[in-house]
Length: 498
Image (cartoon, rainbow, N blue to C red):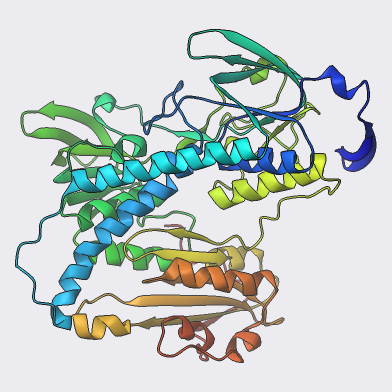
């Protein structure tokens, strides 16, 4: 029996005779997160014999603790979204009063109950992922894996026993880990791992960082009743997003009662009788029950022995790969955050799918990173697809048209909440093609997912305009923005670098 396999941009026949029996596995995957699980299951569906190793499970990760499902399922997107739902009920209850719901003045929140429900759910999902791998025929090993040769993986089991396995292809999918700043008292702070599993709810929180995780936890804890101080180095949070939308998020955070400290950093943490004292570089003292470091993540490559095998890493420790996710060692591949390309769970799934198609499915496939939609689950959320205004200005050859809409959502007209929904389209003036779409407001991720399909199909502004809206809805605003907010000449440069 033979099949075509991908070799350096071409396909060649692989004989399943003596050569195939030289290896115990066609594929061995290190890391059972989103990308690794997808790659292993799809590879097995193409007939590959697949082995996989993953660290033992615990909600809080370490160098020797992980779990099937990976960061997103166990200590990232899924438990975070559960907490976002929990926090959102606080403002929903406030809004309900003006809709005729007679509620007691004091409404209690039980953190431990939500924490138990969250933990039960990730335990359930961990079991589902195990069953999915088993049903796909993937051989799973619990332990720490490292690469000891171009075609050899060593797995250290829980009792310290080391087992060695050979594989025609090795896939690294070990993700990333949260980083902490090197400041005095850093041991007093926590990362998002611990934040999702705190035994006691923090009544006072200081968060260092201005990215997704910082903004989301600020919304979560404030929504549950905590006093939150958000400290970040730039003028606005969410560096890299559209500046106009960043300003909207900042305004909403402040409107909800979160204390923002822009152009600020933490220099020291001190344990006191009243809590943890966080000292800023402006000399300000912020006292909290919890200090969360949301200061970025680093590729999880330190214990994989990659450099000894000759796998090239970049300065951040990420695995260098080509457009097919292949390293400089032809038999070793990598997908997901460990490559530090586009660090999102759905992107890791895409990369894992493309890997399986390329190596075992006779369909050489490159991940397509254009028009990838994503969301920040602040309260309310921000979601975007395509180019920001600043990116469009950098890349445009001609003029740009920017359409914006800011309005009070219908629900707020009765509840009295003063919080605008903002939508934005960036359009190429010459071709009429929609280059980017953004929304900050309730249900933004659900709406922008649909807009992403349109952008992927190359939709024009005229096609948006000719689409009939659903009324009454916020989403219809995307197809009724007729007036140009501003025209940007081709020679213009980005307005800010906040």
